[in-house]
Image 1 (tube, rainbow, N blue to C red):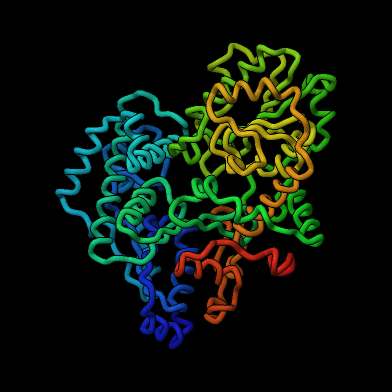
Image 2 (image 1 turned 60 degrees about the vertical axis):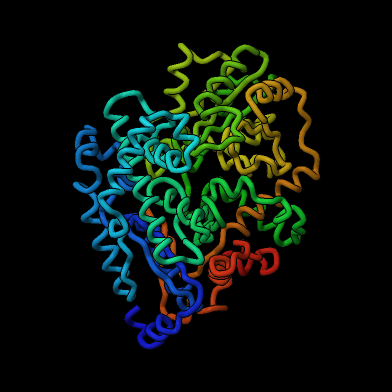
Length: 531
């Protein structure tokens, strides 16, 4: 911001408003570093006093790096990320913040040797007890971090794997202790951090809530130049509990109905998105299914998987403990009922996600069945058939947690939900309460009527709310190839001032006052939303 001279320097001096801690934590998360710097400037221009928290190599494990970097685990368990990442993480990120005139707070500066001893003892006491970890909010974050590291939904019972989990437990506890001490030393009105889960973000979020600070988490949206913000928790959880009155009474204009249809159709190719996991190139589902041996005269149901390891936090509403259990049970149920047919579409992100999965749906099924039942058909993650074409050809879709459920419901297809999908509880899907209820719902599939017009309309309102209101456009971001999918382009400081960008105003107002993170797309119209 050196090019903006007096205005920026004056803004920093005059900032006497809310105290905001931006807990970027991980400097090598380039998306977080870029967008957090934009938030810091925009909030300062609105009078906020902004501090930044960065890890300075203090943790024995974090979200940077995964098992693919370590052919053997000895290097990680003995030396942690310090040997490979920390020198490239904290110093350049700290220098970038200092160029803005903001000297980051060091996470390690909040820790004592006693903290390290306590964290090690705490991790040792849990000793990899998964049930105990799930019941502990910090242990749950550590377990999620370890599962992400291995890109699996479960941890193999091996000494080196347990050692990695122990490193994440220690890191999670240290992150929590450091954040607790910082928030006692300097109370903040609000703590802002990306994602809100894993290590160290999840434990920092938990400490902020315990200290009475408001919490804001954010993540990149699907649509180009958009971001999703949530109050008090990760969006993985808040989108489940969001009150329906935020969207169910929306009245969409004819212009918006057309635009919603256009966008949902564009999802087939990802033309308007900067997060795209798979682009189907074949759309003739009837021809494809015939080649695969699916009988057009028998009912066909579609199961959509998600990536097994992704965001594996504890969700009490799940009917099954994991996607693995759900998938195996579903195949077993259909296999015992030959008149029915099940097509399983494996999520393309198993191959194309930022971390390719080490636990694949095909491997899960191969371990459970010598061969798949003759009425069950597996569609691989790299198969060119369009998922959307399969949805349109199915009698109903069954999901565990994938966000594709939103589009299934909006398309007018019946949707059965077994896990923590965001459609749950919104009146647009059939939600299983437990395993027995799920099996009962499967038994009713054959006689399941198509959703009524009012149900489809409700699903479309939610799709509009999710894609156009919760995904907030920010003008200063420009799409790029690779990850992160954006860069920041600001020609003049005035572009970040109040009233210059409606989306940025919504974000800053939400951070500073607690107002809803909802872009008023229905008022501004498609022309103002598609920037």
